[in-house]
Length: 296
Image (cartoon, rainbow, N blue to C red; front, side, top):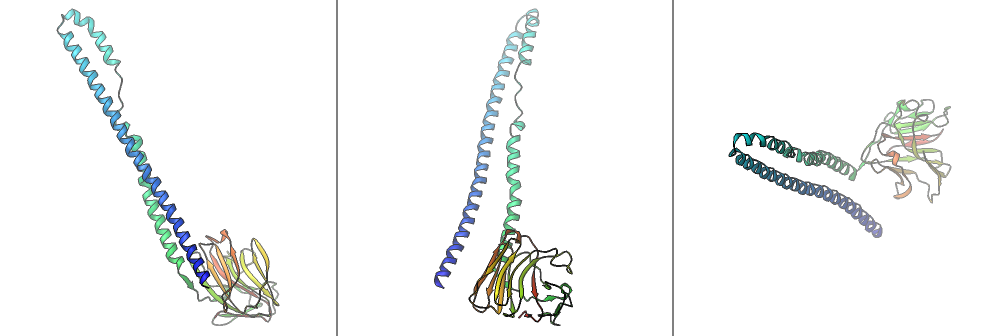
């Protein structure tokens, strides 16, 4: 038991450390990008200043030349005015300082626009961790609307089911509770000598036609034999003890459903399925004629 606790502790530390390293890496990338923008702005300013000084020197030289020409006779000045105008018109048009900083401005906006994304992402992460770190026990009740009255009898308190002599080959009933986030568990007391199925199902469009439109993650028991059934798995379970009280543990964000022998905490089976993430899931139960099932 102590070895198991130590293993879990190491796994917790490793997962948080991996998250921490990833966040530090992303922070470093963004800060490096901002530092590069700072260097680019300084380089562009220096380049713009150098061009500006060159333009000033060129204009000074042109003004000086005009002043010298102005001292000449009018006839000579008129002869030289054409060459002066050509020099002025041939002068390079320097880039506007505003244009020089246009690209950095867009890059700065790109970085600043990430901040709302970071805030929302961190809020979602905090909300997910706060809800997911706390394993919540659920008081599951049965939904009579989802059961065939000729095949299943639901108690008035909606906490127990009895299988009747109906015509359905797979008579099912759903719980009233729905889950799409967080971690939850509930127990089911089953008849170890009869046939039953327990687990979770995706939310049906029509609650009166469950099996035809849903996907289930369940374990089945019949006459001492057991199996794990899901959309992608069908495997027989070899159990050393017949479970009479089963605990179903649902981890929505983790995409995992686990089944335990509730009286011994022995793990019966775990479904790890990425398609569970984002689904709206409900408890589901199935039993045959003469079988009883109870929600404590």
